[in-house]
Image (cartoon, rainbow, N blue to C red; front, top):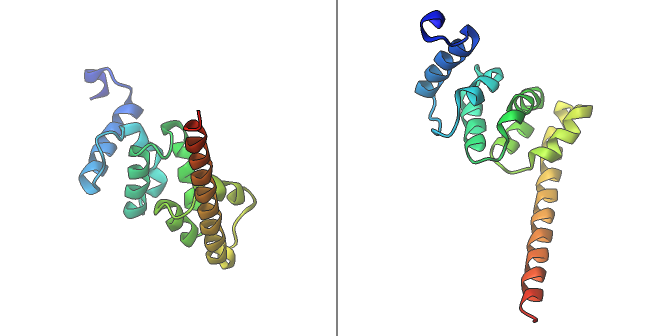
Length: 139
């Protein structure tokens, strides 16, 4: 079939697999066959794959980073992975810690700490925004 279409066999295979995945899980139309191919590490975990692709559709992750993100999320303990996919913690904070490894027994305490860090960051950003807005109206 790749000869008839003029599409490389690997690309054609990726498109066919992507269409099958689209039938199995609900995926936004913004998600490309390449995005689906880059998350193939989650083929045995459809719920996690669907969440990751939804985050990609919302531009939480760049398409070119999706393979690395998938690999990292697959390697970390489930409580941390779930916290990232449910947007309870920031992936960037998890990625730093994943480079050195996250022991399973420290996963839950790490998630709690990362949730606190995210809350502090959000409060800081909100205060910074309010300061910018109030400074804007002084003139």
